[in-house]
Image 1: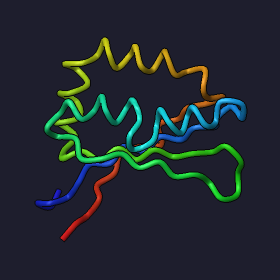
Image 2: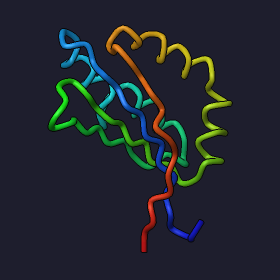
Image 3: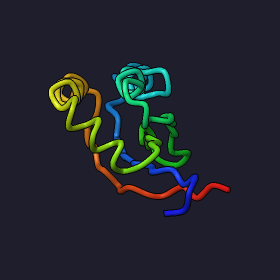
Image 4: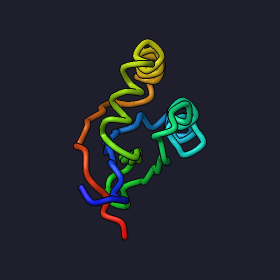
Length: 106
């Protein structure tokens, strides 16, 4: 990892059509997940992108300073992480963690 690189976790969601608006509110950059993550000094931002070809398919990109920062936050806040995940599971038909990546920055 280069200095300045950011750790990015990418999730794919197939959203229930009737719950689309609520999903965008909960998973967007000002949504419940982003507000929760802001409790960590290692959190940078969340982006929500919508597929142009497949209806109701979204990706979230959660940016962290490092993998260690994310893991520490998740471990220290596991009960709330799991509560939010369970609360919002009805918004989607599927949820897949596509992976974690390094965003190379200058």
